[in-house]
Amino acid sequence: MNSLILRTIAPVLVSLMVLFSIFVLLRGHNEPGGGFIGGLIAVAALSIYGIAFGVGAVRRALRFHPATIAGAGLMLATLSGLVSALFGAPFMTGLWVTPVIFGTEIPLATVMSFDIGVYLVVVGAIGAVALSLEEEEDDA
Image (cartoon, rainbow, N blue to C red; front, top):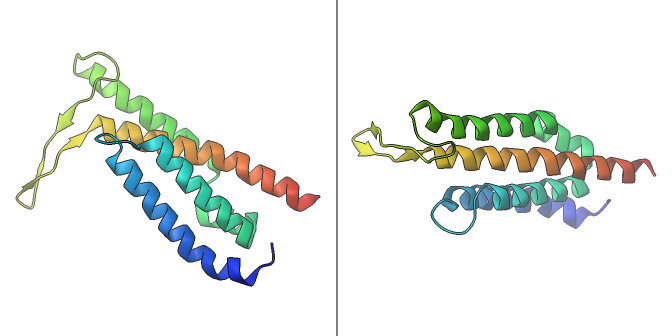
């Protein structure tokens, strides 16, 4: 698409959408949201960027192939479930650790690493589909 208005506003809109997707990801284990919805918002941002600047610009911005991103997310989500099995708990049981960093306790959980894995799977898988559809549209 050759629109000056879209090209001007796209970087700002994409930045806000990616920031919002990370916000939704991080609040997902306590309130509505999580990796799936956050990933969909991130893919929507990438789609807007692709409409404004083309598929090549999106591929350069991603730096990794979408299938690689999805595979890394699937591995992270699976490892998050297997950690609980290593500690004798049932598969996919959430485990919490609270390390003290600079005098502040920071709660970390396998639930969050699972959500990040789901986020990456959605960004990679749906992003690959969206990019291939936009490439076919460009070829026509």
